[in-house]
Amino acid sequence: KQEVTQIPAALSVPEGENLVLNCSFTDSAIYNLQWFRQDPGKGLTSLLLIQSSQREQTSGRLNASLDKSSGRSTLYIAASQPGDSATYLCAVRSGATNKLIFGTGTLLAVQP
Amino acid sequence: GAGVSQSPSNKVTEKGKDVELRCDPISGHTALYWYRQSLGQGLEFLIYFQGNSAPDKSGLPSDRFSAERTGGSVSTLTIQRTQQEDSAVYLCASSLGWTGNSEAFFGQGTRLTVV
Image (tube, rainbow over all chains, first blue to last red):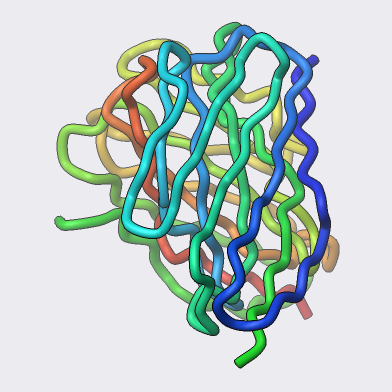
């Protein structure tokens, strides 16, 4: 059974810092991995999608990497801003069931 | 439409009543998911539709929950005889398919409160 874990559960950093969020999964049979952000009371906004054959994807200040063999992904946020404060979720699309399986998220607070 | 649309955005219902939640996926998206997010919790998978295939209902918590997708587009999640533990945000997502480059997009959710 695929399980997705995110570490840390919460993170507080001062504005301007670079930071890394971690996501690990137990079954490497995935189609892709997707990072989302969720603002309080809102739905999920897609940030980056990494296909299983890819190693990384970049969008602006965000860079996501994928090491499928070790079951790990990282989301790197450069020069963090208070507007980056949100919950960040990773999800894998299972190769066995096509389900999107989510981690429990990292709550990020960027202090001005 | 431009994105996934869910209605209503908020629903307050009395315990024991039935409710229907609606999801309009992005046009052309063949995959549609329903998730539930309870306060302070992660996303709980409910059901998955892919094209004309039989839906994956393995996440539905009880037989009070059902969902259908008409014409491969709009989906309705129905909860019968609602209970207080059904209170949560119900999120819908759609994607172009199920392959590696199929990005999932979420609606804003329906916040259900059972009183």
